Image 1 (spheres, rainbow, N blue to C red):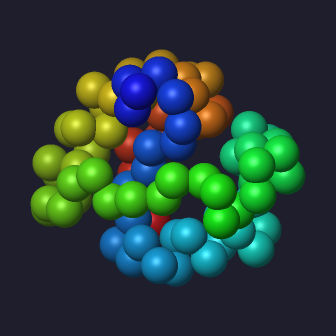
Image 2 (cartoon, one colour; image 1 turned 60 degrees about the vertical axis):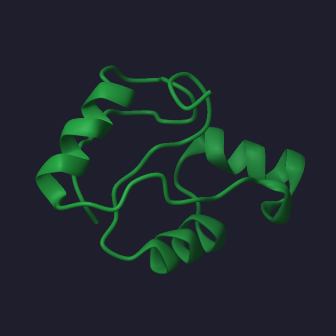
Length: 79
């Protein structure tokens, strides 16, 4: 359930974002999931391709508060 589980983020480059999450996860929840399930067993997919403003709006709806799913903070920024 994307509203309560997993990680939601915005990126200009999905592949770079995935490499960064895999090689040096700074998110404790994600790091624990990688260690528990293995990187290759995690579902990683793009759920929306749109301009940054629209993506931020959707992320705010999916992660309006801190600590939802694996998200630690509701950053609503693109990187």
